[in-house]
Length: 489
Ligand code: ADP
Image (cartoon, rainbow, N blue to C red; front, side):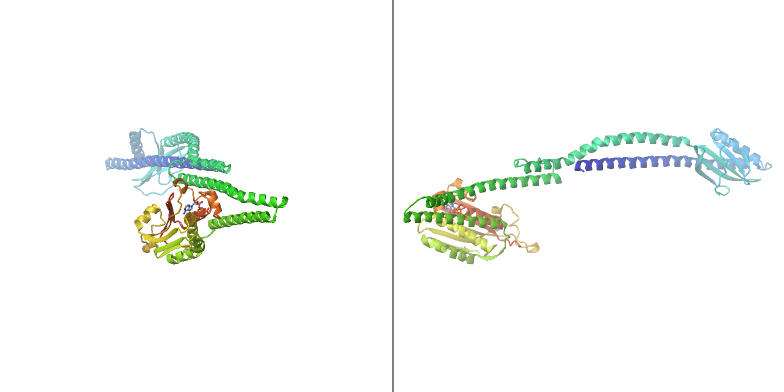
């Protein structure tokens, strides 16, 4: 069943049940109050009647004994004066003999025991009508008599019946009215879900520009916001993937074209031994280029799926390890690597950090001339600058947990060279996969534009920040800002 219908039925049932319950309670309370009121007013009347009777008996001269006929006369007299004889009156002797009744009504006597001088009332149905029946026992000279009175209160039941009929009509109308109300409420509640449904359908069909409208600030609005964010990320990733695939195909095509061309020449043409060796050499070097490209690609995809292992890394040891790796290639160009570590330790994945720094130094090597200088520095900076760099990101707010939490400082590692530098508008793009500032120069150096893309992944995995500053013809400086926070693995 669709969410709309679930909501619709739930709301309708809720409204109907509430109306029925509320109506019943009101009807019941009104009815009980009315009947109780009628009964209580008869109770009061009963006591008044009793006092009137006693006063009348006492007012008789002593020589007149209060016999049955006198009592009947007095009772009749008082009743006729009090209510004009509208009610039904019966007078019984204690042995059950009916001494008087003004009209014939019920057969049975009052069956409940009461004592002389007391009175009682009850609601009684006789035939099709309801009465308040009240009875009082009186002591007269000839014995005990019971005076019984029936007052018709059928009008209370008739009013109740009328109210019930009106209530049923109003209830029916309100239930009918509740359907469009429930439909409207349900529609507005399920609107964000329907919007998300449409959005997912569009995304599934490849329309990555679609977004759902965020309405209000409830949980659905939050879900919609998150969903839109997810769609943004999805779109970004798809664009990146498309660019990546295009660039990758392009990078593959150049060496493959050479390999195919030279191999065809070898297969189809008669050529001197020296030319044959040259062709084979080209095929070999282009093959190696493809191999390098595939290794870099594997490294890049490996990093994206790798679990990162944070450990304490001594910065000086780290610099030494990097130096060992790059020293051979630097020496070929007589490039000097100047290292200075004014920082103790950082937390990160040692192997990835070594790969990262080696890549940066290798790029610097390619940028500097023969006998150039590359600087590799590390220093600690205080929380304030650290916070500025991370713009309030929670990754730097605390070093340690709970009570041990203290504001974190940062370590900055800088790789600086005095090489050819990069144009401003190109600096923004050099971390894109396969992006090369000078393609032919980069390819000649064995590059494929994947080194900095790899570095970007490493930065993301560590949740670090970096910034690249470069001035064409002056040199390049790359800063890596590392918060002093130990991420648990
Ligand atoms: P590659 O593997 O081809 O070196 P990278 O992704 O490492 O690719 O670098 C991308 C581009 O950025 C390179 O083509 C290079 O021209 C430029 N670049 C990177 N570092 C520097 C630097 N220190 N000085 C000048 N140019 C640089």
